[in-house]
Amino acid sequence: MDNFKFHVYTEIFFGKGEIKNLPATLGKYGKNVLFAYGGGSIKKNGIYEQVMELLSETFNVVEFANIEPNPTLDSVKRGVALCRNHSIDVILAVGGGSVIDCTKAVAAARYYEGDPWDLVLDSRKITKALPIVTVLTMAGTGSEMNRGSVITNKEKMLKLGMGAPVTMPQATVIDPTYLFTLPPIQTAAGAADTFSHVLESYFKKGEDAFIQDKMSEAVMLTVIKYAPIAIKEPENYAARANLAWASSLALNGLTGNGKSGAWSIHAIEHELSAYYDLTHGVGLAILIPAWLKHILNEQSVDRIAALGVNVFKISDQQDKFEIAKKTIGAMEQFFASLGIPMRLTDVGIDEEKFELMAEKAVKYGALKHAYVPMTKEDVIQIYQLCK
Image 1 (cartoon, rainbow, N blue to C red):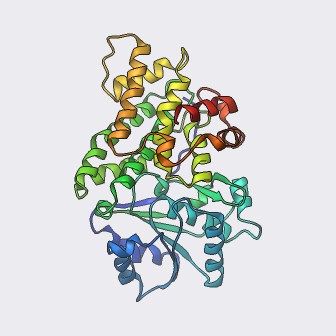
Image 2: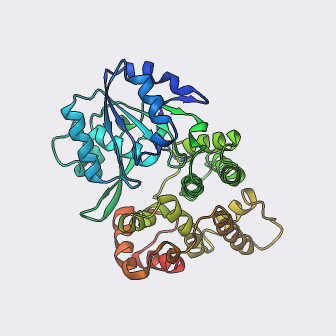
Image 3: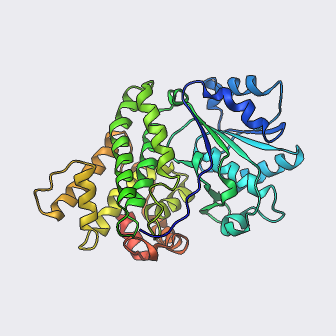
């Protein structure tokens, strides 16, 4: 196990009605609140009214609405302007990962005089950020309990990650009932995103990180058990609660620390959603089986087989390559069972930009340091397998 530093300071308020803690939590930081949210679903399900009822008498609330599913640099700049113009003390992000990701960039850029994109290209330039408090309305990204975010630059057609210790949310409200109204495809995409986070950690380099791998397997088993239930029974509290907590645990460092190397699937998917605005979790689900097929060899077969035996409950009384192939098939079948389209052509993507996207994935994704190192040609082949 490699050396690592682990520090997650986010205070979690988990359960029904825990939004009641917002006034006291926000009050620690000041009175001027930037209320960030997305396309307006929180106005349909009643969360917006709850927030305003809790805050309107005590706080000066400035709304920052219409944050995109893949948050853009333009939205970051819009949020920074609001923070500066209204002397914002604290940001309240109500939504899923896209809203939270956007506010992390806004929080950091508020104190940076240059182009916010500089902070995406080099997170070492982030030295200060506004405090962030979040209310989770979609499980999957884990952004509510980590420092990272992903921002899209439409002009440069790039989708890249950023983050620093100061961009980690100070507190997060996780009320599983807020997930009841999620459309099935968003529930499925969030489940795939959670699954992919621990899968990426599972396939990082490193010896004897036994406990990290077992925690990763537990998160994957949780997704396999509860995602179908949440889709079939949207108001099943146990399913929503377990998926929400799995999302937070999947990317707060518990499963990834102590293992080195770059992630593979996220770098390849970021190009898809940068060019085609594809839902991130859908793109990941399409890519995962293809990536596993591509990397299956003597180096990776034992790890893929272990995934099959421990997570998909495939019998270990057979050839390890056969186990690995069955594992990949079971994973593809699972994602498809959630209603996720499993081919790029199903989501309107052809091979026109395969070469360009592959080149950028290798350039920005450090894929030479992945579990199985990849070149531009490898990434193109993975895209081809997804057609």
